[in-house]
Image (cartoon, rainbow, N blue to C red; front, top):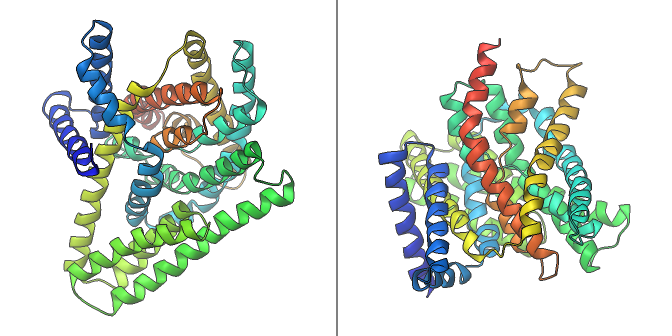
Length: 413
């Protein structure tokens, strides 16, 4: 199946699942799409078990022909991060900068080690041979959070603006930091990185620092181009070029493309929208990127639901799932609670903020994509199965209940 046919199938499924969700389920779109996609996948597996293999084999060929890691990390992620950053108010982000910074950097690193330590105990306790570095690799790929499925719920539940900014800001930046940490650990496993503090520090500086500097550079370059004309078609095209060309250039220079896109999105979304665009351009730009965001998210969650067709389940992996899910939640609680505890001396936080940040820290496509990028090895299947289970649990269970937690916190004030 060629790329057009694959895209046609995915877009069609996303549209149909969106319709079914809006017409009947009436739950947040991304969660609804993934649930329907998951049910379809389980139905195909059931038909396969009953001897009806044709449909399941066709679906397997479709999903097997898609490089999920390449599709997300080298394609969709740049658009999603830019679109997300475009509507984050820089003044609001500055007010929460220390919280966001601590959660997106120290929080990710702390979560990586806590998850890694607990995963090592769980896997090896169940007789699954999992070396320490692979447990850390799992910790790195599962630590970044995804705000897509939860932001709409927070708004509907009447969450405080400061809480929304904390979750959105953290998740925009921790994708880039999480990928850098993942690459550092993967390099150690493959013997490509020097296992010293200096070597790790240099890689972090190159990826994260380079990503910030490059994102600022291309964001300002696009800003000056946008300010020099008044034609919404050309200006929307310039932002599209900024995302696609900027991400490709960042990858070629070995700096963090995700961080570059977030920084560029913040520049255009704040200075560009206010100082370089007419009202007409601003309206068209917002509509274009909002639609782009919705379409790509719909396709992404269809893919997540269908990926179960490629997993190979074993009994000990399923036992590990039931132990790893609470371990990941515990690690999230620690990595959020410690920075908040330290900062309570200097600033006030809303009631139950640690619980909300913990339960609202959903995992998404980036975790699945990173798990799929782990090179073939005896450890890969276990990591992929457990990662998928954590992502599905967080999106469905946490995503559908976070609203109740937010409303309960409001009533507790």
